[in-house]
Length: 253
Length: 253
Image 1 (cartoon, rainbow over the protein chains, first blue to last red):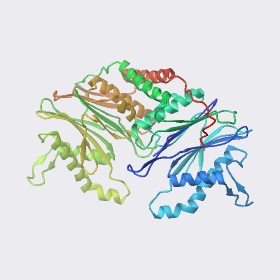
Image 2: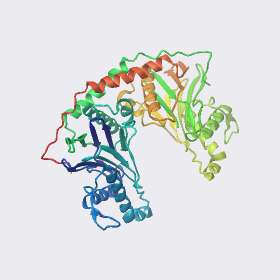
Image 3: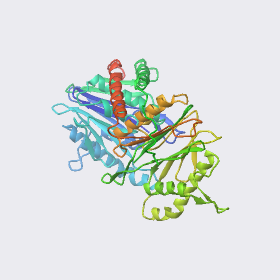
Image 4: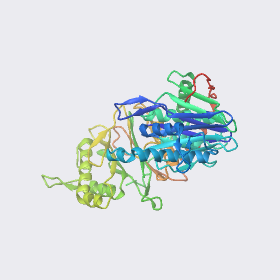
């Protein structure tokens, strides 16, 4: 399992990914799922992956090593494209190339061709954008109405985002909310685990402002978990007791 | 979709169920999913249902109208059994009877035989117990280690339960936490909706202490939602900003 979330707010972008992979509960490992492609001042792109690790690693390799353009024969990499839209299309092409190589054989051995990616960043002269690319290579984009996208185990960490994140959320606040969302997911799904990789990109900065791995001993994250738990406890304790009694006249059954 | 949760704490039992059913997003209706079977002083049983409405309504009818005992031929209802364990077994038998009548034909028309029930309550002289009965008719029971069980769309409302509910949680607090869990689910899944039915049974009371329907105009629930949202906002705003910067020596990719 996996949990990755991208938050695109007015001032920039936050991408957070866990690092746990598992093939069954008895085969757990740590793999990086958050990848950075950066040429400061020219482009900065993050790609976070969920789904089959073999597929996602192959896709990342194709983005770096490049693929031949179907007509010109020229080798193109993730650094070749002038806009984020074209980068998202290229990522989709890479997924379809991996499907061409392995898809049929995987399906033959009952392994579903399952991969989803968050592709986000900015190319100089263009906008900061956040896309979710599906296993068919098609994609959607986050907008001001829905400024975050999740891949993998998204449900446990969604309520806090639904409540708190808007396009006008401040960048450090967006990072904080993403970490709270990750914490809720880690608590409820064994398949999502530490360490956590984070990337923060300020709009029009065209560089990675923060790239950091949060491990089990990270003081800030431990403190965030503790404060959040304590605040939730205080919050539900402060709500008055329910006033309901048994209305004899309206039996439920 | 559906969300029902049962919480079994030291002082009693809380069961909460939404009332929305849908056959596709364009066919939404309100149906009761929380059913009470009560003879005060003798037994009190709640049954909450998730899954195919045709199956769950048939099961509820069989529990009320009864089924013949396979050997004695005697008609038994949910009121016939001396222990909650035997009640849970009976509910399982009712599910298998519905499967016998409709299962093959449903599978033939690609409708999966999908139903899950929370069966909880107390028969005089026995313990207050909470079971989850699966579509095969087998079941598990909540214990002091894991004092709550959920059916239907369980993920959005699970984090608050994971954090806050223990066997020693007070009964009104358990109701409050169940309502917060329901609120989180309603916010994130359109298939779960108001009104909400609640039942509260005090241990050894052998009667329903609270049976109530919470509708959209319910002042307490509106206040709980507002307080909870405000408290979450205050909670994440009170957490300090993340201290992370870009460590130039450890690039992420």
